[in-house]
Amino acid sequence: MDNIVYERLHNNLSTLKLNRIKEIMDNYLERAIKEDISLTEALDFLLNEEKIYKDETSLRMRTNVAGFPYRKSFEQFDFNFQKSIDLKTINELRTMRFINNNENVVFLGPPGVGKTHLSISLGLEAIKNRYSTYYINCHELIEQLNRAHYENRLKDRLKNYAKYKVLVIDEVGYLPFDKQGANLFFQLITRKYEKSTIILSSNRSFGEWGELFNDDIIASAILDRLLHHSTVVNIKGNSYRLKEKVKTFNNVGGDKVK
Image: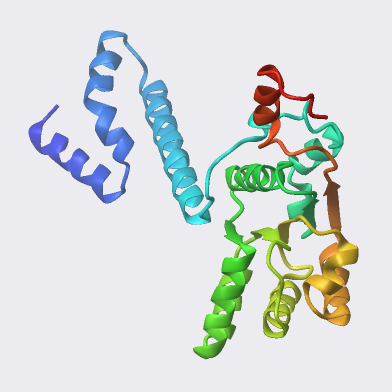
């Protein structure tokens, strides 16, 4: 290959940001010549490698932006331990139809049953399907909305959360809401209502939300919008985090824990 042509080819690959092709092209072209690979086959291989590279890079970037505290898949979840979960419901959620329909998902249950794991797994599936996704702990969410309110930036902050097709709000109910926090949470739910999806986890039953938000009326309004188009997964099992501790305790001769 002419040096001028070769240099122009590499420059064009850089300009077009075809970095994977640029990385593997020299070795592959040598192989293509030796194995008499056609031009069409060579182009197909190189472009496919570039696509795979770009897809993987995009997935990694979108996952980083989502801000998950850890990454766990559905395959890592012990459904045999949490038998109250209907696998048909989980498999239906994994089709992503609920996102296309702007529906919500609520995971309810006591601490340790896997609500956060399932929320994150569903969020990761959404990212793989190219839906913009963001995770935030409820307490942190309210702190940020409060700060934005005092700094006269609430509209922008709400707009920022609303821009994500999927917003994962974790651990609703571990800390009570004051009146302003409840109002700010209501504004966010209202902004996303029937426009995008919320995946929410909570350790409090819906009957306790009036107490949680210190206002029965605003709690009812939040639930009305959140549950209007939704799937609720109510987990009634034991704490997965205590599973190994209980097993260890029983194995060393303690009284059987049931």
